[in-house]
Structure formats: structure tokens, C-alpha cells
Length: 90
Image (cartoon, rainbow, N blue to C red; front, side):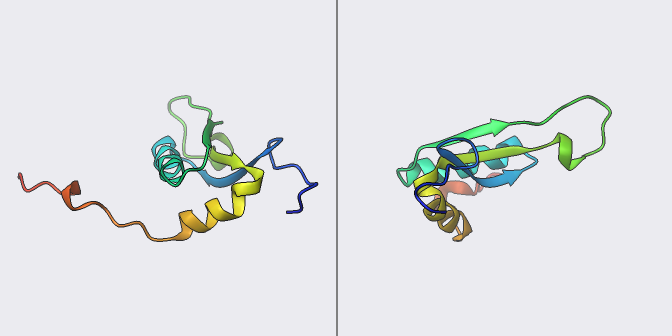
């Protein structure tokens, strides 16, 4: 993307699209920990009962357009869980 092109949402660009809000929040947290400003936009429509239809379940993670490539690269990298992530309790 050139500097003159706007991001997909004004100055913001979508770097992740998922159907689950928790996945988007985790990705945004990872980006924030790396020093990037990230926003989660929940554009899903919920009505029960409703099958999982992509058009009705879209959650996007946005970053500033100039950080989009770095954000995508970061999200592609594997991320190890911390040592204390697993509980010894049954």
C-alpha cells in the first residue's frame, strides 16, 4: 500500500478477520504488547438460532495503515505460551 492510499477504514487497515470476538481481542492484545495501536470492530449479527454464516459473523482487528504490514507479519509468527499458562491442578 502506498502512502497516498487510505487504509480500509480511513487511516486504519484490517489485519485480521475472524468470526470470534475472543480471537480478535487476543490478536489485538498481542499487537498492543508490541507497541501498536489496535482496535477491535465487532460487525457480527447475532440472533438465535442462527447457523454460523460468515456474512453475519465478522470481527476485524484494525491498526494504523502505516503499521499494517508489520502487524500482519507479527500475527503470522508463532507465539509461545508463558510457562505458567498451564495448570497442574486436575
